[in-house]
Image (cartoon, rainbow, N blue to C red; front, side, top):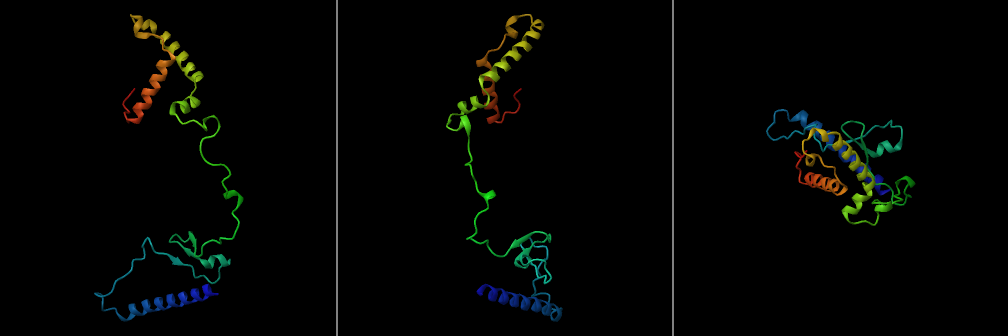
Length: 169
């Protein structure tokens, strides 16, 4: 009941202000020095929706944005309403599965890229090295690579990315 009386009082005050503003513009045309004009394009401006032929009662209780489509409710949502099931978080965010208890970065990285993947990289790299071995006069210029060398290369590439050295090739 108090809310409705307060809304009616605010509506009366707003109507008085609107009629006073119209009256001031009509009578004080010669006095431009003491008057401040409000810009209509203000970012903080909010319009009230005064449509009396609205389709639903919810439309009467909202602010309408400058784009005439955005609506903000004037009242806070009720506190005694049950939260919808789709808004309830059922699983806590964070790592799951084999990574859940790991804290060291190297352990987490080995869960993502394990030795089987790195062995495939080593095998294909060695095949590529063998295919260009005839282009070199000394065999030490094209030696096969090993698993620790590939891990060291990836570590250097990650370290270079952390230091933002994008010029590494």
